[in-house]
Length: 94
Image (tube, rainbow, N blue to C red):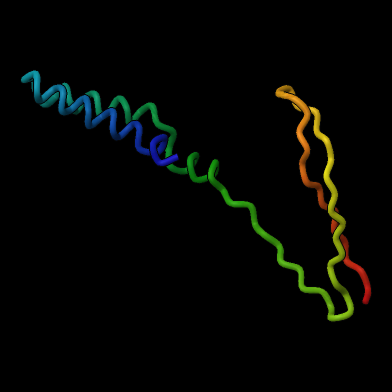
């Protein structure tokens, strides 16, 4: 995930180093860096894409407890049948 985030920066740095190694003027390296910055989405779009889903914490009265059933079920997948754990929970009175 970090590689995807920093990939445009690494490409720009690589282009700048290649331009310096070949003896090209600095303007070419700056142009390449500005082109890669123009292709990236704005920071607000990235922030909205990485928005966190809020978690809700439930604290019931002392008379209630969480009762759960567990079982194994067969799931039919393209790679073949797979046995997966399943769970169903609900609030029950003591």
